[in-house]
Amino acid sequence: AFPCIDLPDRYVAEAEEKGLVADAMYCMSLLEETGIVCVPGSGFGQEEGTYHFRTTILPPEDDMPQVIESISRFHKKILEDYGGGGDQGTAFLDDASEAADAADAAQRLEREGP
Image 1 (cartoon, one colour):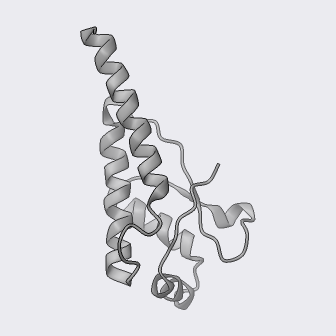
Image 2: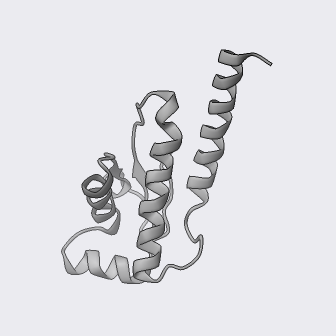
Image 3: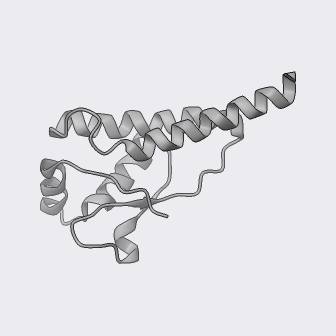
């Protein structure tokens, strides 16, 4: 599955001015700002007007909350800078964060016991 990201119109317009698809610009910026590598969904024939990315996340399990938080901060900054406002387009991050929290709790329980 490709997480669907909502991008503000101003961000999409800036990408187009640069001759890029918005999710490609998003992935390059994510790499430059966080070191996290993603592949734009536009390379996989996504539906016109939608934006996605694909990534393989391979850090140690203990680092997952930090990775998810880095992506979340990056995305929220785009929304703030380009007028996306609020929590628009962050549902995929909430789901991933909940999964990371559950994995962290399971790992803690395994180490420490009930």
